[in-house]
Amino acid sequence: MNGKIPALIRWNRSDYAKLSYAVRQFNKKVNELEQMGVEYTPEEYNYKDLKSDIYSRKELNRIIKSLKRFSTRETQQKLIEIPSGEKITNWEYQELKKAQKRASNYITEKARGIVESDTNVMGDREFRQLMRTKESISDLFGRSGSDFKITKERALAWGRSDYELRRADVFRDNFMKALDEMKNYDNFKVLYNKLKSIKNPVQFYNYIQQSETLQDIFLYYKDEANAQTYGGFKNNQNAFNKAIEDLGLREFTNIDIE
Image (cartoon, one colour):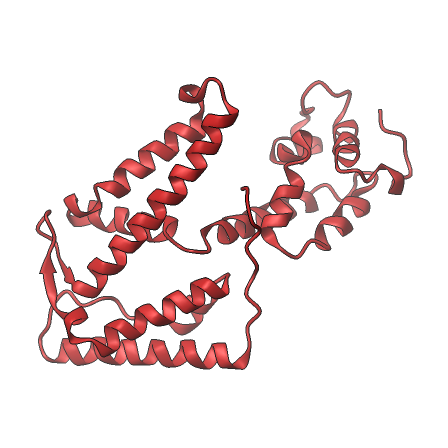
């Protein structure tokens, strides 16, 4: 994750009201169309679920504008048939096209970063996965049935304007849960307090990337249960100590780095 660090949204009362209103109007229009016998309408939104999945102000504004387009424009409510034969509203088609483009651009950028840093790029698992994802999203409108639904969700997920923030937040949540299993390690509090002080998920992710040892925390945090030792270290406490040193926290520790 490189480039400008995206900022987490700081919600205010106006934000809540605008999103809530946009959702109510959207759902009202969906219900009206269904009562008129219109098929293939979009699914209704749940305000709480939608709100909890918004990480940036840019994404909030995008969603509100999108919902309003469907609620207020008859042309957006008309049904169309995509090349695969699936029928969807013009609104959903337009939103999917935009998501498809955003996803493709984001994946291309990530793949470019791998190419620039890896001499054996074709052997890179992440690069191959990115290419498969991009290929499937590019073929979105040629798919039907369950395949269309799955690929649609993939395009919408990768096409979020706050995808990087969301992914980093999931990483942070999983990482902190794994770290909690290491509370008996010496200097656990030193690392724990430092990580808790980093509020932005992307900054958290980038900070962890400074230590290759710590990136692999999920491989060795249950040392006692699995009787496994990470890497070539004498024990996992030493591996943990190395991570502390990588992150420049050694001056706050009470033991030597071995």
